Structures are given as structure tokens and as C-alpha cells.
Amino acid sequence: MKTNGNRRDFLKQTLAGVAGISPLMAMLGSIEKLEAANIGNEYKAIVCVLLEGGADVCNMIAPVEDDAYAKYKAVRKNIALPQVSLLKITDAYGMRENMGAMQKLYLEKKLALVANVGTLVEPVTAEEVRSGAKPVPFELFAHNTQRDQWMLGDAAGSSNSGWAGRTADQFYAAGDTASAYCNVNAADVNTLLLSGGREEAIHFSDASISPDTMKRYGFGPESGGSDLGEVYQKIYEEKRANSHKMMAEFSKKRVAELDRPDKLEGLFDGVREFEPFSTGVHEVGKPLGSQLELVAKILSVKNNFPGSIKRQIFFVNQHGWDTHDSDNAHQVGYLSECLGTFQAALEEMGIAESVTTFTISDFGRSLSPNGAGTDHGWGSHAFVMGGAVKGGEIYGSMPSIEMDSPDAWYDRLVPTTSMESYLSTIVKWFGATTDELNMIFPNLHTFKTNGMEYMA
Image (cartoon, rainbow, N blue to C red; front, side, top):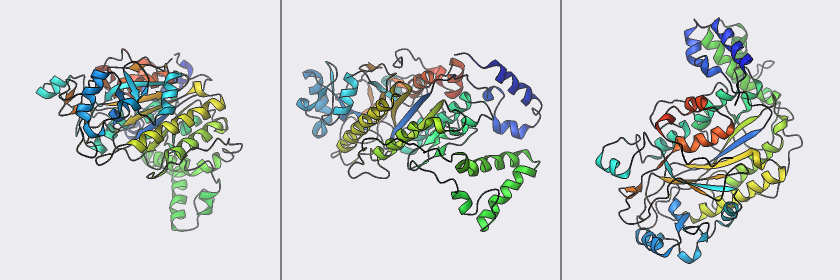
């Protein structure tokens, strides 16, 4: 990928004049981090689906061959999937019986499986972990810590911004209007994934926006009503008049946020309607189908965004995967149904080649049950879907699911693929160079990415 030399030279010359302003430069980052890739005219989007709580992937993918299945059943006991019910995807493995939509996508080569991926400080074997010869990630089995490491894209602990925030910074130069609309949260929760960039992520709750909302509640440059309105009015004044660089930068960000409704007026004009997305049964929080439908609607009006946006990262969240006292049958079936419907919507719009959807999760689950469900684990499988995916294949090393597995530590799979290797493959397709990938994923150099070429 070629870089835009003129724009980068301009940024260096411009910033050289303020290089002595240490607080501002510390906040914005180095000059090199303000460089932006030349992304051309091709639109691409990636959609991150968080399976919140830790997905039990051994009850999503299971061996179908007799000997391997017998070992699987011995360790999974009462929660083992029936062998005859498995939907075959290879000679060796099958999907759960309610994953028909995902099986179809896999057989059509639109879906790939990335095996045994997880947070790693450095490459390790199960034996090295057992012996304590190599370090493991901080608070390995804690939901919040492990989820944060996935969002930060760094299990070594050197990052304080989300990898999507850093990606946006690499793809858009400072001052680009489009950078304000690169990262989009369509979930019902905030996320570290999109945090820490020069521009804050935009958060939509539905496919509509009221341009005058902020003014109606007393916010905005021409308002002043209510105590809160006066506070925001003061921020506008600070942006215009304050010579303190830190305060001016803070005010600039808040003003940009308040001005968004005006700038996005008409965004959802002509929004496309799709075949109904399922809202699930017994869903906690905003249903995954509703979130993916919102993403599809935003994609249908992507050309309405200011600044000719060419790259976007979307975040959605499926709750309910922390299955200590139950099987994850409902979550699995609902995920499959939603992904199938979403991919159909992308194909209907003719943009399936331009959008890649992928899953992440806190961690996997224990191999053996605790009675009714499973406990926190480590290694997990991930799914990647889209027209640009080299689907119908399993990438990485499938672990042995058996009693005293050589691939496990205390009944938890030890990852053989790092999250950096997995995520960087997607961001490379997005358009990042090798240098940019190493800035986005600071610990990437520790891992090999051979065998991760699942993107066209």
C-alpha cells in the first residue's frame, strides 16, 4: 500500500512548529502516529462481534470421527453434543445441530474457523505453562481483564487505547473529517475497543438521528438555557478563546461531539429496510439481531457520511455466554441465525466483498463440565465471515479434546494462535502496512503469523 507523501510531509512541517508544546504532543502522540495511510477510493468495513462471557466453543465445534468423538465425550460427559446430530464441515469436525446457517456459510466458503486463539504474552506450549517456564497474561481467567486485553489488542500490558482507535489514527490524518466517523458502536454497552483515538467513536442506538436534539436541551453554540446548557456554552467559549493548549484540545473534542447531530443531518435519509432480523428469545440487553440490523442500515447509507468515509469499524455485543450452570445452546443457535441474516443483507446490498465480520470472546471454557455448565477457560475458536474471506477452511491448530489433553493446562486449552496474529490478519486486509500493524498491535512482533492468511 502506497502512502500519501504530500499529506505526511505537510503534517510533519505543520507539527514541527508546535513541537515544543510538550503537553499537547504528549496527548496527540508522536508525529509518526499522525501519519495516515492512503486508502484510495475502495470502501471496507469490519464488524467485531463480542461473544461476551466466554464462549464454550467445544459445544460449537466437535469431532465427528469415532475415536476422536469417544475422547471428546469422555471429557465433556453430560454436556457432550450427540455425535449423530453434528453438521459436518470437514471429514474430522462438525458444527452443533442449530448452527445450520453458519454451516451453510462455511460450505459456501464465506466463513472460516480460526482455531484455539487467545491472549498470549509470548508463544507458549502447554508444558511450558505447566512448568512455569514462560509467563501467562495478567489475571488470566478474569472476565473484565481478559476482555480488556482483547479490546486493547495487547496482552503484554503496554497499551491504554483500543486497537480500533489506533487503527483509525493510522488510516486518517489529523483534521480529516472522515476520521470522526470511522469507529461506530452499535451495541448497548461502551467498549475499550474503539477508545483512545484522536476522534471519539460515534454511538448509534437506532437508525435515526435528530439534528436539533442538543439545542432542544440547551446545548450548542446558540443556546444557554439550563445549568447544563451554560456549562456547554462555556466549553464553546473556551474553544474560541482559551490559550491553554490542553483546555483548548478538550473543548475542541467536546464541541465536535455536540456538533455531530447537525453534521449528520440527513444521514439516514433513504435508509434501507431488510428482511426482519430475529430479536431472539430470552436475550439479555439489546438483541444481537437488532444490533446487526442497525449496522446493515448504517452501511446502506454509508455514502451519506461527511468526508467520504472509506474505512469503518463496527462493534456489536452478544450477551449471555458465561455458562457456569447451563449449556450455551441458545446463544449458539441465535449467533448462527443472526450471522446468516446479516451476510444475506450484505449480499443484497452488493457489498459482501467489502465487509468482514468476525468474533472475539473473553476466553474459552473448561474442557470438562462442572455439573451443569463449564468454568472459565483460555483458548477459544473464532469465526470470520465475508466475501473476502478464504472460507471453508480451518486455520491454526485444532486442539485435542480429551481427558488430560496435551494441549491443556488445568483443563483449559492453551492457545496456539495469539489474538494479535488473528486480529492483524483482518486489519492487514483493511489496508494497514507492516509498520502500521506493529503500531496498532505493539506485541505483534513476538508472534508468527504464518498460516493466518484467511483473507483474500
